[in-house]
Amino acid sequence: MQDLTEPILELIRRAATDLPPDVEASLRQAVEKEAPGSAARGALETILKNVELARANSTPICQDTGTPIFYVYHPEGWSTRKLRAQIEAAVAEATRRSYLRPNSVDSLTGRNSGNNLGGHHFPSIHFEEVDGETLTVDLMLKGGGCENVGAQYSLPNSALGAGRDLAGVRKVVLDAVHKAQGKGCAPGILGVAIGGDRGSSYYASKEVLFRQMGDTNPNPELAALEERLTQESNQLGIGPMGFGGNTTVLDTKITALNRLPASYFVSVSYMCWAYRRRRMTWQDGQASYA
Image (cartoon, rainbow, N blue to C red; front, top):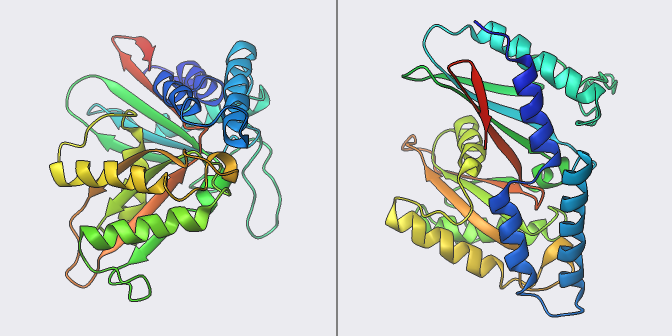
């Protein structure tokens, strides 16, 4: 098994400093939807200048470089123990080079580890064995502001009049967006999971955020709900960074999981405008990035 520490380090650098093209294009489209001279348009223009500077200088897009969340899809026979060690080594080196801010804090002592490592779940790494000989590593850097406004609902929810159906899902997702206001660093992207247990539902709500901006859900019902939630979120008047305007949400991604008869969870993972996610593919001894 080859040492992938350096290729993973490059994956982290790209995720932290270079916003994906589909996200940047969506932000540029959003600028045109805001009135000239408005606070909303000014916020988006400042965001885009920041994106350009971060890319040019290879510096973090946001001061909060977030929790590194890795989804690793590996061929049969690869050692997940060794992969974990290489990922952790790459994270520590990325922190030393200031691609990542030291973010791992012991919850009991308040001590910062200084290298973004700590315990068994920081960074967050998920492994799945797949067919074929290609290794794929997806990385998301999820900041604290947007993570703090994520939400999970158990339906039915009498306070919101939300039943156990897609109409109820719509109500609770819009409630989460409304409660977030500008604290999630809008414009945001919504990752929504319907079903599962509490843990798998949140897991899937983040995993679905690796879809491309503007793609279409293969399930027609979910595709229609994604479009409706994006449109209705943008009618709430929250706008970029909470300054008001027409762009509160850039896109919505929904997935559905099987559930227990007794449970109907809806989990909302709110991603900020700094939608930092990148992919590394390793095949035949070579890394490629997207």
